Image 1 (cartoon, rainbow, N blue to C red):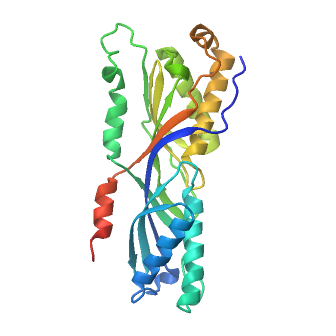
Image 2 (image 1 turned 30 degrees about the horizontal axis):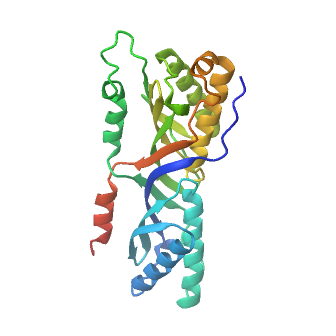
Image 3 (image 1 turned 120 degrees about the vertical axis):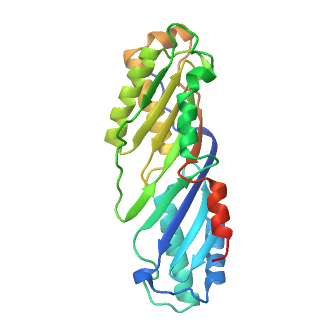
Length: 275
């Protein structure tokens, strides 16, 4: 059964990231220029449609909290901020190049900590009233040994909570079908270079906890999961789709929210506190 691949999605999202990068050789270049550096970064973010939530300049590094869109990648954001701020600093302050050292730190943060997201995924069966059934149509997966992701010159932890709904919210998945899809997604993730840490499948939607690398957007990750997933189901398990009367596995929309060790509110308060 052929299912038309998705090329774009309608998004509901809240994507927050803590970013940090240092000056070349940790030179104290901004001891008396912190306010101007903040102005540069604020202007750069506005020009490129990044929402700068907080910025904390230091003599030898810059820390900031940004809100991004699903199609934006951390690698491109870092390249844009560093390149443009370096140009402004060398021009305005007459600084020698390079201004910034190679590499960066990037961490996802969110409305709630990652532990709360994990617990929420684990309780989906109870939340939707399936626990009382003799054979609940639910499948859960959680990685016992999380896959280690790497990228050159970057330290990162980019965790995202994804929610995908079936077409017309039809009850398509059973526990066996959820297991088959989850196993297939793990193979896709291994090939494509991202990690699936947790999955919760109920009949009409799926929750995932995924980690991505800086060069990948969550939009790209979701499209890979949805297109590969519906190709797999359409080829190997078409009957549930026929019985549901749908010609797509998914709705052309998704939710994505970042999460991490710390919340957005905590990081924002920390960055806004003068040192």
